[in-house]
Amino acid sequence: MISGFMVLKNVLKTGYPFVESIAACLPVCDEFLIGEGYSSDGTFEVVEKIASLNKKVKVIRQQWPSEKKYSVITEVTNVIRAKCSYDYIFSIQANEIIHEDDVEFLRALPETRPDVNTFSLPFVHLVKDYRFYEDFRLRFSKNNKDIVAVVDAWTLGPSKSFTKSETRRGLRHPRRMLQYIYKGIEWTYANSISSPLSKAIYLPKPIYRYWSLFPIDYLEKCQKHIDMFGLENLRKDMEALKNHSDDPASFWKKAAEIRRKELGFNCPTALGTVALNEHPRIVRDLIADASLKNYHVRDEVLDSIRDL
Image (cartoon, rainbow, N blue to C red; front, top):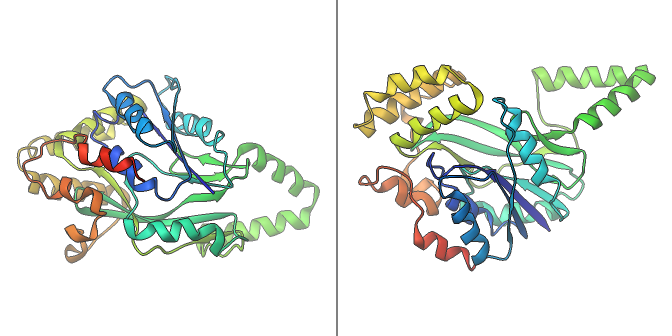
């Protein structure tokens, strides 16, 4: 059985499609834990409603640390991760949506490879329908206490206590340390994810990670990242995009160019956008409706959660 988990705070204000994210993940999971950071924008009321509609969902309110650092998200994520009760864990974030074609494959992972501890999954990163990055992220794992959220919670990995313990063991056994160094070179320069305990899994569709769906929400998210993490480089991005906010077509083209440059992702024009019918079905109306100016919670998506 699978425990899904997510943390969020004031994501309604920043336009994360979090209701769609939760709804898309529920068919994969046997329980779904939400760490809610005492939002002030209506986010809590929405997730409370979701929990009332589906008994899989459990909402746990938590105070977020006030420090401006990426590790804040890791800290609050691991509070929720520790409460997962089933054999496998699945970490998903509030702007990530699982394609409906992937549900059966994800549900079957524990049975498909019971010998594997952790699974890396394919992600495509988008602003609206513009592709600006792709990668694999370790998000699905056996519920081993030494596997936790790391960095800024974008991936799972070994806990600090486990890493320290393994380092001490390595120092006591020089041959083991040489093996670690060799593997370190492989993982640094030629990572094939070849460990029998950790596998990269291809899904029918990648997991869709939407940095933003609407210009006003994109700018709001930039401001939130500046406020929370002190990312002043985003202020320059905001200034470059403000003049395009009334023209979505030029806004998203410019936003994608900025994100690609920052991440070193040079995407050919012909591959730069994702066709509407390739997106998860649950989010297509948000992408297709040119009259929408910002994200809103749709009653039809809430209604569907009852039966997931």
